[in-house]
Image 1 (cartoon, helix red, strand yellow):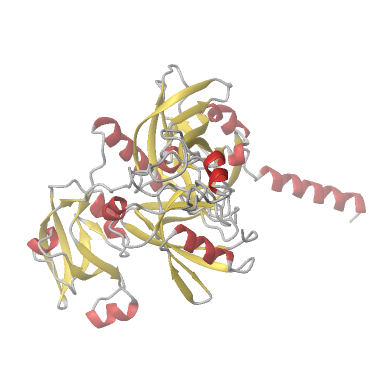
Image 2 (image 1 turned 180 degrees about the vertical axis):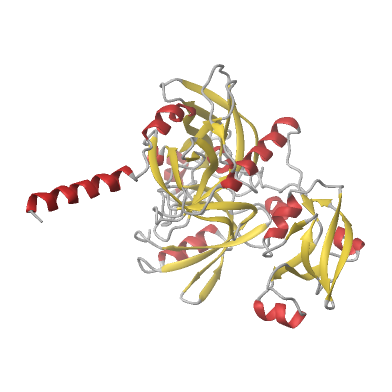
Length: 481
C-alpha cells in the first residue's frame, strides 16, 4: 500500500471521527438568548470598633488627650454629650453573580435560591445587553430554587425537557456566566442520575462532567434537542474549582416548586415522622429480605403521622404511595412530594412478611431563618473574612433560639471560591482537623483556630443548613491573618 494511500485513509478516519462528535452551534444559536446573567447587591451594616477609653481622673495628664481626640458622648466618659463616636454604623455593598433562564415570554425566570438570597437589588442582563431590575416571587432553600420576575414582554423562553428520559452517557450542555464571563458554553455527558447529596434529601440530582464554576449557578442544562433538563446548582470540589463533578436540579422538580411559589406563595411538603437508615446486604439477610432495598425505620416520632398509623421501629418501608423505595434516600423525596393531609398507602416489611398501612401525611414546617441584621442590644457583626474567605457573625440569643443551637456561627457572606459549598445563611457548628474537633463558639475563637492551621491542611466543617447537617471538607489555603 502506497504511503499516499495510507495518509489518505488516516485523514478519512479522522474526518469520520469528527463527524461523530456533537455539534452544539445550532443549539446555542437557537436557545442561548433565553439565558441571562444575574447580579445582586446586598447592603450590609458594619459597626467600626470603637477605641477603648480608659477610666481617668480629670487631673490625669492623659485625660485631656482622650477628651479631645476620642470623644464618646456617653455618660461617665470624657467627651461632648450627644457627639457621635467612631462606633457609628457604616454601609457596605456585597455583590455576587449568577445565571438564570427565562421560562415564559412575560418575564418569569428560574435561578438558584442561593444566587438571590438576601439580595437587596437584583439585576438581570439579557444577551442583547438590556438590563432589568428583578423581584423575587419566591424561593425554596431546600431545593435551591428561586422564581424571579422582570417587567418585560416578548422575551425568548426555553423549551423544557423530561429528565426521566435522560440516559447516562448522553451529551448535555450548560450556558452561564462563570466568574462573570457571560454566555459561556461548556459541554459534557450525564455521569449519573438520582444522586442524593448529604444536605439535599429532596432533590434527585443529575450528575454531569460539564465544567461548572462560580457564576454558573442557576443556569440551564440542555439536552441535545435544545430542551432544558436541569438547573446547574452545585459542584463537588476539594480545591474550590471544577473537578469533573457537577450537579443539576431536574427541571421537573424546579417547575413543581415554581408552580407552588407562583400560585400559593409557599412550598408544602409531606412528612410522616420517622428516622431511617440504609438497608445493607447484611441487614437485609438478617430481616429475611431477598434484596437490600427499602428504608429501615430506626425511630418513630411519638404522636407523629407514622406513630398514629402504626408504623414501628424495625419496620422496613418498601413502598410509599405505590412508589418503590430502592434506597433509603428515596423516602424523604417521595414523602416530601406528597400533599400534606392526604392518605398514602405504605408497604412495610415486618417479621418476615409484607404489611400494608395507611398513613395520613403531615406537613414539614417552614425553615426558621435567623435575621441578618443584628437586633438592638446585640453584638455588632464584624464583616471581616477569615482565611477561608468566610464572613462570620456571632448569633444573638434570639437567633440561637430560632435555629435551635447552643453553639455555632452564622455565615454572613462568602468571598472568593475557596469554599463553594458554604452559603450565606449556613451555620458552622465545628471544625475538625487531624482528628481534633473544635466547636465553633465565637467568631474570634473560630478564626484563631484557623490561623493556627498549616497551609494546605485538610479540614472538615460541620454545617447546619435548614434542618439538615452536612460536612464540608476543604483545604486551609492562604496565609493566616
